[in-house]
Length: 290
Image (cartoon, rainbow, N blue to C red; front, side, top):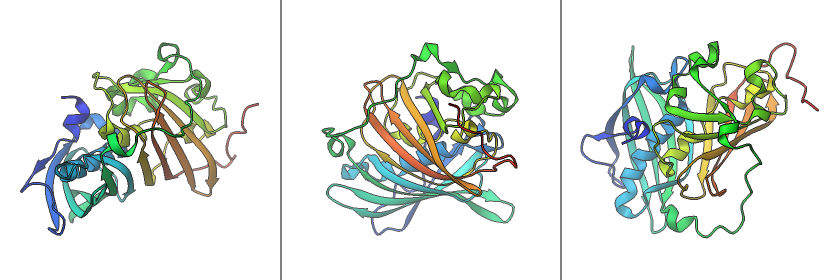
């Protein structure tokens, strides 16, 4: 079992939810190793919610999240988390459910994240591929820049980096040495450090596991996700995943970040869009290079 599987392992009180049966309750534990700064990575929460619904609808032949939307209500902390699922509909080709993740607070339970998803069988729903964008050209992983906790003061606070083998495209890594391009692009190769191969469960984590693309705009630090919607477009093949982030819209204290994920065969397997917070400095964003 890989570290991500341990992070999304569920202990059901009375078994998964059934349609019309109200909420089913499970528990899980969010480990210290998934923290960015003082909060647990939102991608891990989405993967946990996706796993809860996958276990709910697997008996109906719908073990894969095909599309999901998550709102982030408060910062999750390492420790126990209560996972409450409700099966809204079980159909012939897809099923729909919702998950709430809560932790104890000083005045009672605090909801951290709520995820609504449509599930099906990716082996059926995503085949064959009729049209798909090609991955952007990138150097091989061994020619890219490793992202490690010893890479600087900011990186030292990202425990999540220990769980990943993350190699950033040198053309988009200027932010790490104080030279962001201003184009709003970040590309990287990603795989789990423990050798776990990618699958559908991993995709909601992968779309949110990189540093914010706002770094390439010259804005480092705080970039909380308010809402993220994602889609699964195939079961990923074994090997590296190629992730490309892009931002072309910034307004006030908000920006939109898009993510695309390709597997080792060059197939687009996931896509997401999130609305996130941004603190644009008084001097504004970096002027795009070139």
